[in-house]
Length: 338
Image (cartoon, rainbow, N blue to C red):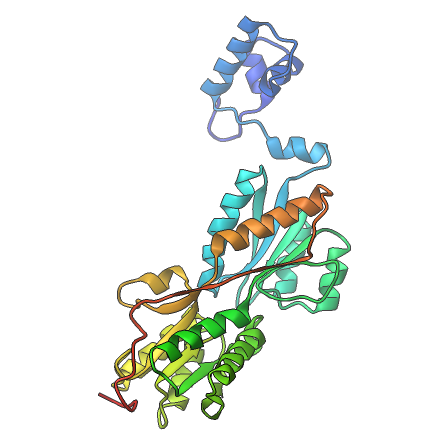
């Protein structure tokens, strides 16, 4: 039995089984050329010693890695939800993921550079903020799939939700409940923000509510939602359509802290259907992005580009859906503290 201080090698297995390394390799690869007794002995020794074939090294020797690099932001809970779906989709087609995170002290360029050193065969970028021209340069090196952001660059594939439609669903839902004084807290400069903002305006106009259109500057985090809630404190609306679920939680905390009942006084609709939005104490009505469809679409497109398969459309746009929970209801009168 080998010491646990180092990885068991094929040479260790061959020596223990009394065969050559070449013959042990034939057995471990399942190739022909080894007798039944020898094959059984080598496999038994490999199992007993805990030998694990280094498939990554073998792939690299063949010029392949079967690795898809993924850049995500640790500050966005929805990105974590997407990673779960992406692992499932990649595993189903025999690929693996290698991750590189964007953090408050690590920018997207650094995250991408880390993956380029890992010999990835394609990159999937969650809500990339990199300039379109730079994405084009990157796509000249390997397949690039941008998620959750429209990108006007013919060499970059896109898999995203119809964000404008998502905001329209939020407004349509609130209008169906009887709300008119509906405001939107946007995502600032975040990818998808302009589309969600436009969807809000489009829906309000369609419902002849132009006079009530009001957009508060926001962002992706709880603090952004909290600041927006403070801004609307002196003239509270009857309903708010938020940029995302995380900013919605910040807004909810401040509204409730000021004595507003949600949804009794103010209804709130988030965006993403992040896993935390389903928690009982949050119970957020939200616009759901289809995690499985987004993840599956991104992996399929990356693999198609890697393997040279023709694709019909550069951009895949997925329909969102509304999930009604406990933060939206019919208005009970003029908004204000309980």
